[in-house]
Image (tube, rainbow, N blue to C red; front, side, top):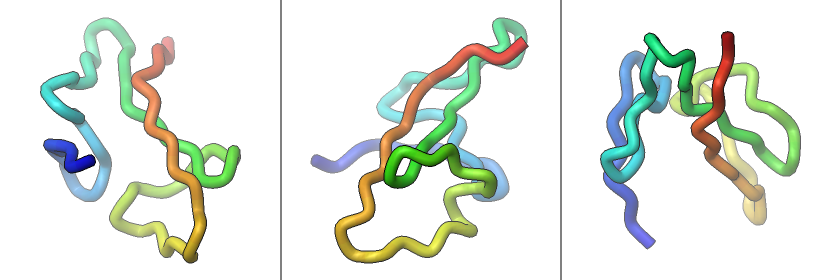
Length: 60
């Protein structure tokens, strides 16, 4: 499936119209093979069969 993605300096800010909200502490995060990514999406080097999961999560 193709997704509509917006980013700012390599960090995902919206997917399919679901945008992060700084006032609510809501941010896009993602895991690769079950481990939380520690870099922006543009800095990640993927390998075949890597599983990426994006989540709109609350951080306060």
